[in-house]
Length: 214
Image (cartoon, rainbow, N blue to C red):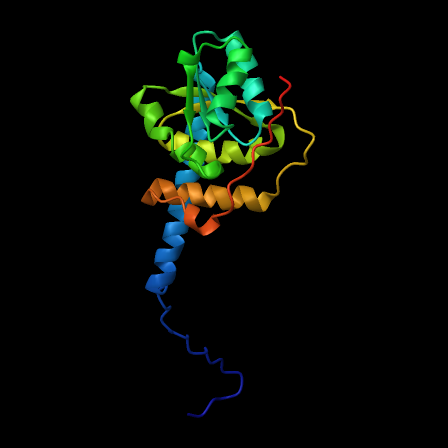
């Protein structure tokens, strides 16, 4: 074809078809998006629920006797509430602590199924639902509270149970973000599958330090 001087030729449009997203990538992105949406929605609901409900029990995460002493003092202020201790001090010693603070043994429930923070919650969530408990005081050490709240907001929040955190003063530094992220993901796994992944993080049973002086 001959082009005369000054004649303008429009370039041909490139009509390449756009490739649709790969099915696996699309599925993966959808799962991640739905998981984040579910988690954020659950946390928002949990915070609103938490603000409206009055605690119906005291829930203590085991690991150190100071948490149990603190919970006993809290229970003195709320004589109508029962106390649940998850994998705390040995039974005889735990009972001795609460007896020392004048807490009737009928109010005390000791459970030793939990292996770690995530299973502290999964091992008792069904029992709380059976007892129609919709809100609890959550008692744990100050440096452990952030991780405990993340787990509670996902596991308890998915079952409509609110928490009011009551931190036990601690001189230990705050826990790392990796632990919070790990247990948050394990909690989401439990919500969707009923599994906690505890077998992946097996460790030697923690030794709970006790003192004879109460």
